[in-house]
Image (cartoon, rainbow, N blue to C red; front, side, top):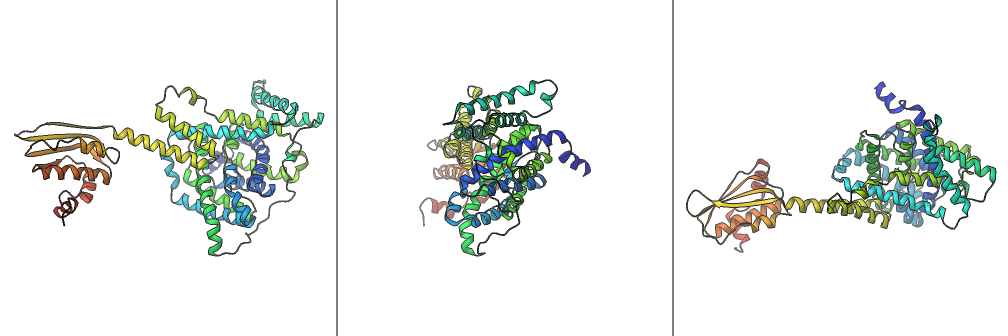
Length: 496
């Protein structure tokens, strides 16, 4: 246990500490912006980012991943806040936490294995595009100073690592923020700063219970929003965890992460914050800046609160151009550039799944919708591909007027019609043997196709023998097939 604690918390002190500071700085404008999107005070998003990061550091299943207030979650809250107010949002946040904990205990995170790599790639590319698009308001209708500062920031981020000795010691995004802030303070140029985004809180968050009536009417109001927040929050968190797994070549406990996200949202709701989830942008910043353990997430949350409450005067002077440069770096680093090259090498179905995920996610700004479309297309393409892998050969039997059909492949809803069409019912035969030793029946549609084949042969006076059914196929055929039930067959054929 001591070894596990050391590995999870103290295996990378320097890298985690510096990365946590960078993430805290990057979280501030994002949290304020997401609060504005949701229609609540900026401190609601800042308190949420603090509490989410601190709680998930202890309860989450993916060390080094950052959870906070996010744009995807904020978009789902707009109507609730507008129609019912902040107190109902806090209540919905608490219910979201409860539902996410239930999802963890039900092991719903195991469903992630049904998300194909092409969907994950599309999700990553869509997020990279959305992160970049989110920076465009800071780069439109501005003076040349903003472009110069942003370009200088990108130059520092990408060139500083090549500086001897200190280049590998300090994370370049932190150097970018410090240098550009110093330039702004020295020159006094007219550009937007963090302070222009909104008023920073000047007090620590306090424990509070949402001031809403505890009755079924309240539940009816918040439940639809909580369900949406639960699905989107867990989906984005699971996808982000998968990406961080790939970046660090380590595994994570996805079901523990579900429970951790739930606990974090309950804590957030009780501290006056809005619901949140894992953030791919800040998680990538953390990893790229050297963060690896839970300590980096904890430091990010704690430093965020300390900065906005006790160092607000200094933090408010950070130029937005510096943070825009950091987020553009995240966008560039997040996008899977190899996926463009692979478009020529990968099958068309794989490319379509990836591109559909990107287009739907970017077009709707709904991560859940994009992933849903991607998973649906992947499933349809897979079913079609497997359904085409079916061979039925016919050969003469041992006696006269006998025929042996050998079935090879998978019989299910996508291949059942091909299976039924492969038999010649007009041929005058005394006996037909259907060899199923190299076939597998998966569902009721397949069993119904088998029923149709057997009944049609018997209607022509042909004896039918089924041989070679494996145990799983035999179980479903014995349970649902009707070809050996005279009454069911008579009913099927229109009898009374």
